[in-house]
Length: 369
Ligand code: FNR
Image 1 (tube, rainbow, N blue to C red):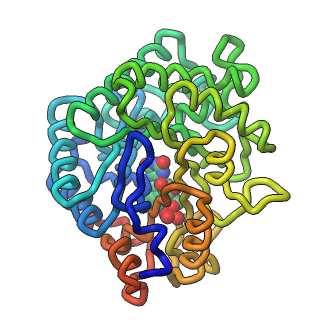
Image 2 (cartoon, rainbow, N blue to C red):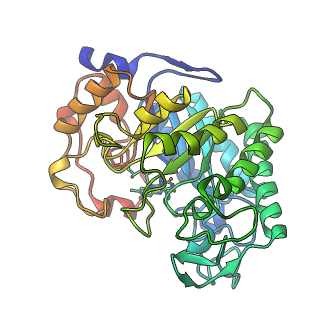
């Protein structure tokens, strides 16, 4: 459709060229028995590539560390079998004309003993806390930190070898990297704790190690969020100046594209300006930014926890999206739940056929389709 042209024209983000501005948001689906993505997972991503998505960001896939995994049947990103499964996913997406990045993940303190792989290993995190003030797991030693940094670097190198087009580091939502960022869960006295610059050291080491592993030309996407799943009102940065101080070192360490996780893309990030988090990130760093949050969902039905059933879908949100895309507020938009409900969401919106879109319902998560 003409009015959505900005979303559906090819875009060149430096190291990454895409056929349009639509990304699939990373969404954990727990359909990988034995932590191996199988044919059902291949088909699931193939359908979204056939459906017109320019860049698929996979569900979080955990790196090779004993405490990286937090939920059953999540795909691993190491080991011959899992990597062979991922290679099939990449080939299917490429054959359908799409591009794809794995979201590399370590859950940190969110992990509970008993989840495999990892068995009885407790959650690992900066200060042993998933929730501020409550120590329930293991505070990472320097050796733990070095091992996790190396695991991210290895995963990134493997992603490049398999043929992925980029990688995304999961630095958002209160998982391990974010547990270091957040003062509520990082009370370390060593060089990994202190002010936000010091709390960023772990992320910076990962980004530098990943960059060294993949070389200069391979795109690194970094996902971050102000909000935490442990506290939706948490904020890392209260002002544009603080955000700039936070993001600049990450960009200098090697981030090519920031993925700015918000729950409603139309919400202004700071008082006195209409710019959302991606808009600010783009403005402050000069790097491309991905926006996300309730695209294709009806704002009137958005529940506070962001995950409940939706009764209605879309038009208000789509108009807002096009308006903001036309203003160049962001480079890409990630679509999550609307793409679970409609594998061909991108093609339908591009063709102006929004009347055929199905509303997302939570029960759709019960199967992979
Ligand atoms: C998510 N989200 C998410 N985010 C992330 O960074 N890694 C992940 O593995 C997941 N997993 C996940 C599973 C499910 C079922 C949902 C619904 C969401 C968050 C997701 O990427 C996105 O930011 C939000 O869903 C908001 O976008 P939508 O759904 O409003 O378009």
